[in-house]
Image 1 (spheres, rainbow, N blue to C red):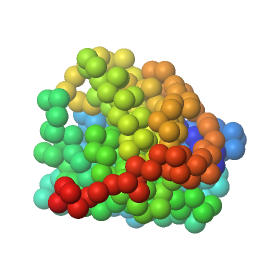
Image 2 (image 1 turned 135 degrees about the horizontal axis):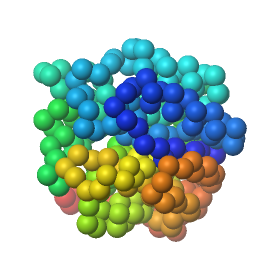
Image 3 (image 1 turned 90 degrees about the vertical axis):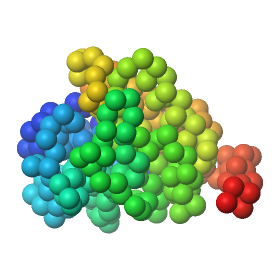
Image 4 (image 1 turned 180 degrees about the horizontal axis):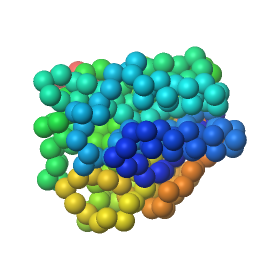
Length: 263
């Protein structure tokens, strides 16, 4: 399966960001991508007041993404914000395209490194997977990458890969952590992990997560197969779905689990 990771930088204006999504999706489609994955906060970057711009999944911004997916014949996965109740929003991944309509609300909120996402965002409570041409893929967002249980849950649900959208905070050691965690989650669950982040906007470290770039695709054996630098760029690569079964025959971490010991 050919996928594209769209490592761009979004701003505070949802309409301008939608035009970026259209431009980058067309580029990915021209390169033969079946799935196009955009970062967390594609609708509007962090640091923007979220509640006033949040829209429901049947609102105009999501419908704009659906039209882009329909026109290009691709499945588009993009981060947006939906109403979450009690003055907060949900940090939502929309996955839409021919034969696909799903959403995922970020389960693990980024209350770390001096930032408190939970003050403005309500947590999700369910995993989400999508089926594209018979290939099952899980959905995850940014801070989720620190929690292996979610990626194993994707594998248990039949997924051979996880699409991870992020707006990774900058700072000392954060790039090393990003790469290490993505590789570890691929190994934990023996799945492909395609991780796309916001490109580095060049503003330096701060409490509001923006992006560091360095999107990457990791195989089920934990080996990096493709990676980008810090700047805006499109990564198009093929996932060998059959490789998951081969790796699981050799590295039986899912079959060898003993969850009853930890309960």
